[in-house]
Amino acid sequence: MGGIAMHNEFAVEVKNLYVEFKTDYGVVKAVNGLDISIAPGKTLGLVGETGAGKTTTGLAMMNLIPSPPGRIVQGEIRICGQDILKLSEREMDKLRGQQISMIFQDPMTSLNPVMTVGTQIAEVIAYHEKVNKTEAMKKAKEILELVGIPAERAKEYPHQFSGGMKQRVIIAMALVCNPSILIADEPTTALDVTIQAQVLAMMKELKEKLHTALLMITHDLGIVADICDFVSVIYAGRIVEHGTLEDIFDNPAHPYTKGLFNSLPSITNRKTNLKPIRGLMPDPSNLPSGCPFHDRCDDACDICTSAMPQKAELSESHYVECHLFHSDKDKSVFGGTK
Image: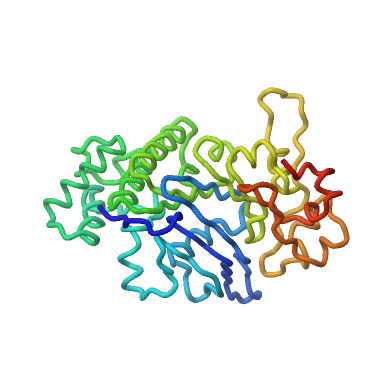
């Protein structure tokens, strides 16, 4: 199977990534100095509102930013120690599927309607591995069984599968070459809650079995709580807070992260009023000066409007980009130390 031996502690490392798109209305700054790293067998949840830069980050990690109008302006993306931005398109083609795979949001549009699901999976295997058609189909049936679909259904077409089954096929296709990294972009959005739970449980089980590093792109904190080891909160293309699942859920520090939790209904206290975050995500073609969250933040002070906050380490595993954590006085007020 695919994946290569790791020479460092991370399956994927993204450093200081900037991605922009040139449009008729100006330059859209989608990702602005983003850092991400995921160890083998671990899951990182990338959480934020629509338009925060989540999907663009996933596409950049696959080196699939459409050009034009998009381009990776600067940064480093290392997959299993290799800087993919220095690879040729042919080398990148081999890397995709074999070392890094992506599950896209909508299973309905990710499958070819005129090919059987078995043939579609077998094509992926044949492209990446030196096997004949018979062996590729045998392996395709094995991976279908692994995701809970009977092997005999390999000869059926996508329209004969339910939404949840289609998503299982997509996951099978993404995992068939045992990639070191799997990116899942809102993989359960189109599914009902019961099927969503089944698909997530299956992904969790497969990730542990195959020791895959998983990037879970989502806006749903329930999914994060269920499947993630670490959480990165993204806002206007930057990671504004990062920590273990416990760091973020038990001790959220950034006003934006707190706002995300405050806008969730409480099961234990149904009388609690929800507190939505006021305003909207800033226009990425016209980002505000200073901290991009300052005009929505109840704790904003003068420096927030003019200077971009630096990382403040709250513990070995937990950091936040917020001016409130850069003085001892503010740390004690905002509960920034542990």
